[in-house]
Length: 138
Image 1 (cartoon, rainbow, N blue to C red):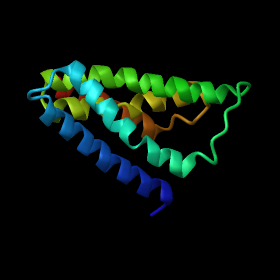
Image 2 (image 1 turned 45 degrees about the vertical axis):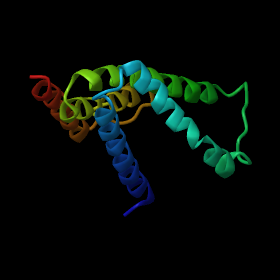
Image 3 (image 1 turned 30 degrees about the horizontal axis):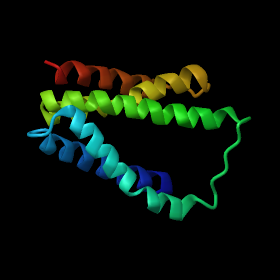
């Protein structure tokens, strides 16, 4: 198994655990508090990040990709806010699955802006994701 697949499976497991934990917490915690507590949970492992990556960290004001990474973090945080509102109102099996279809957006954007091939297989995947969205919201 290639390294990226292994890392992807580990991320999948942790994100699945994240969705489950937040649904359990949403039984008695309001969305605003979920957001704050989850952010604090994320920040609690920041010292580990610093230990692992601080020596490698460099920032260049001239490199637009650094700004894209910051924008990506902001987009993820805003998406998280809406996730917490959704998970507090909906079923975890629906909310987590529906919001986990976000790769469909990445595939479309990568095809439009990064010249990545939009193959028949990817088009079929997007169609399946759209069908899943319809089935999950009924």
